[in-house]
Image (cartoon, rainbow, N blue to C red):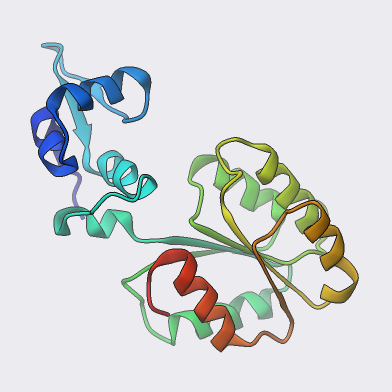
Length: 194
């Protein structure tokens, strides 16, 4: 979808607020914008979509493509990443959500710093940074503390108590995964039917 640029008046219409509210949101950093050489605020469509999505506001059709739920999956086993991707996408390109896989927690953490997902599915035991460490860092950051995190592990019985004690995840699945239940959880967290 090509980027569109909105005026503050157009953004106000889409958000169902006054133009002054949009300007105030820009001034305090709630809404990203840039200034033209003449000093007028302009808003990129992706930034407007992000604001609407983040605040649970209605998203017009023209911005829906930019507001699709984003899911990250982290696991050091390539075979598992392939299987879960195929099972969630159903063997076709899904236009209702975006799915990205990572084979290391560190790579996922770097990507989350740039573009946080709506839901993170992660293994626990991985070389380098563990899933526990990844979740701990995300919960400590104000920007990602509320992220929906789903643990997927072959060692759930041994590790889940520590995660629960530290409130690091929202849901837990043991490998092999019950995909029907996982789809229900993802539907609840994203509002998209899986």
